[in-house]
Length: 174
Image 1: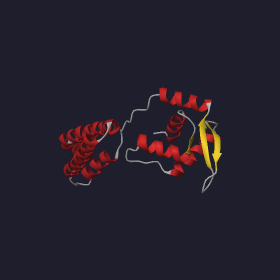
Image 2: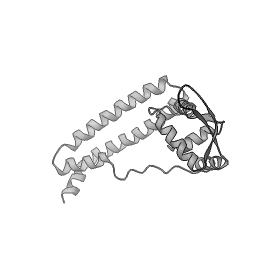
Image 3: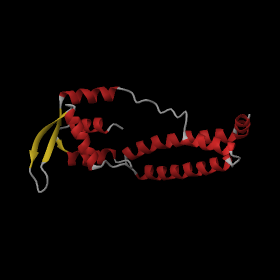
Image 4: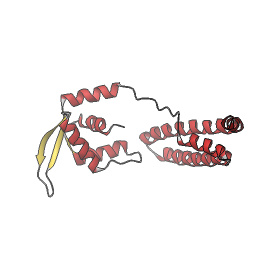
């Protein structure tokens, strides 16, 4: 996810302090990865340097002055373009799990055991996501569905690979 574009999108509703942006981000997109304050402020500085946000007032407080940021016209245009552009599909032509299967077969270790262990790990993750989805709000349900669909695809790959292990082992040794 583009943190910069996300912060710009949140600023479209009106000027905000970095602290407020972090709180709003975590409320809307909290899914297992809260945003760090340092990342908020470094991103805001980059957006400011690039002319996508501007300072919109400073308030004195008990600590450092609190700057309020507002999105510029260039920032709005940037968000519009980002929202219209499709995300690149994730194509996993080379991944760690495939590499482990090949190395297990090349070294004479049990690739089936590796696949079984991985299947168990995927099933545990799916049970956790399903429980979270059951107890969650619509945002949790949608993000959990996304993750569950990816895990289901991985499980299909694990089953297919397990069915083809002997053939793969023959091809690797010739």
